[in-house]
Image (cartoon, rainbow, N blue to C red; front, side):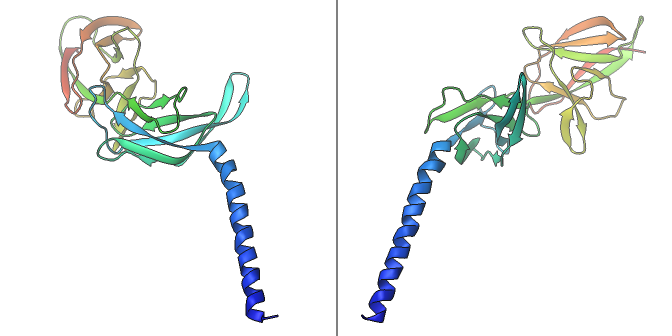
Length: 219
């Protein structure tokens, strides 16, 4: 038998077996993952670039407590678009974060293969409080409420980026000259406190990208 012919048959069989294994493996991968794409936009619909979008996958659940694993994030482009080619089909959600936006988790109930998701997120608005002399107790702390009266997280500028204030929704007023605080553009009311006593409420009209300066009674 021709030796070249035998070698050719062996190569064909080997290549054929490799393709069979590959095709057999593809259904398993496609059954557990899917493509997923969409856009991250601001409240006014404008695209948000340089925002991180990451998959969150539930790895274990015990009662009401779940363990999550974060996948490799994608960064939105100039159009606010992101795309995953292999995204888990089950037990997963999207985690949206970035400097200048409020952290948000986005559920995927009802999302179908090929859908272009649209994820609205709130931007952070920096503000500074200038204290002026006045009679009565001085304002020491501040909090913010949305239109429904819900308390919002406050942020401080640390290590070149915004991070959630340590106590969450109530912050001590920064010293003069210190970095400003920031809050979601959803904020509609600023509340001033002295100790545990609420002293005043001021309506807010914050603009993302601008620094709002508010005057309040001080020492």
